[in-house]
Amino acid sequence: MEHKRSLQSIPDDDLLRRLTEITQQSRRVEADLVAHIGEVDERRLYAREASPSMFVYCTEVLHLSEAEAYLRITVARASRAHPMLLTLLGDGRLHLTGIARLAPYLTRDNRDTLLKRATHRSRRQIEELIAEIAPRPDAPAVMRKLPERRSTVEPLVLSPDPERAAPRVKLCLDRGGHIPPAPVPLTAVASVAPAIVQPLSPARYKIQFTASAELRDKLERLRALLRSQVPDGDLAAIIEQAVTEKLERLEARRFAKTSTPRKGLSETDTSPSSRHIPAAVRRAVRERDGGRCRYVDGQGRRCPERGRLEYHHRHPFALGGDRSLENICLMCPVHNQYLGEHDYGREAMARHRGRGRRVSAVIALA
Image 1: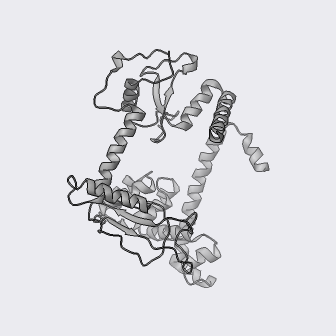
Image 2: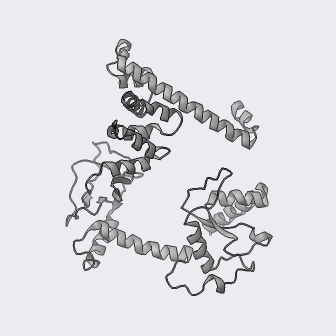
Image 3: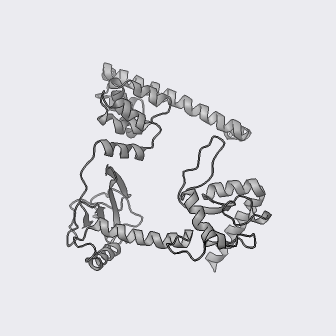
């Protein structure tokens, strides 16, 4: 608690600067830790510590978690063949997970190019890079029924209410195959698991999730209705078409996207007579901002958020701001609120949020 109070007294700029410095120190320490693990592993010093392997030594003696031990040992062994990995880890150009993913594909011939392309990339981006250099074949489209949970077998993932859960269907989607005419029983017991989106090759992904029996029935009905357009019943093609149509409807409602607009910008009233953003302005703003938050910080970094976007008045509407293209931009909720605090003050925004919560509560109780 005392440490928290001491942090609360630090000015915003100093707090951000100190966090950056601590992160840099942490990366250097992480690189040293990995280097030491690699050297102990190479000398097999874990044996003198009553450990049969480096993994056991890390988990039982150093008390790392299994995942922490696996990542660091993998990176340590890769760094013995490619010493520059420790430098990239220490200065933050690559993270542990990224190096562990890349390690099996690094060679003396490709490492310079590959590591340069992987610099400052997320885990998902690195997996996409790997799919590009080592593509895998498309996964077959499969739709099969998961068995009921048996009390004698522990499920892989606990569901919220396994006793009352409806029958579930496992869907594994891709363009490279067809679904069977009826669900195929599984021999293993599993419950609802997180969705998987895994790159296989450039522009090709394996998408796997667990669905309800109702969704499976809807997919079968949709497949029957689209038989003339998708004769082979390819599940990925059917879902892509359905998602495309849904996106068009949602984007038309949210961003006024249409191929036949009734009014253009020149014909639209953008005066500050109303808070409502005209359709022509919404279309133009989305096109200009690329469907992404427009906020840019002092270092020129732009917010990457593309979800839950809101229309923001650069010059606030309550202070006379109009609805012109120049005054409206897309913002994520966090930056919309952040700029609102700059315009109106934190206390005013807190009161506004409090009124919104009370209104929501009244609506919920009504």
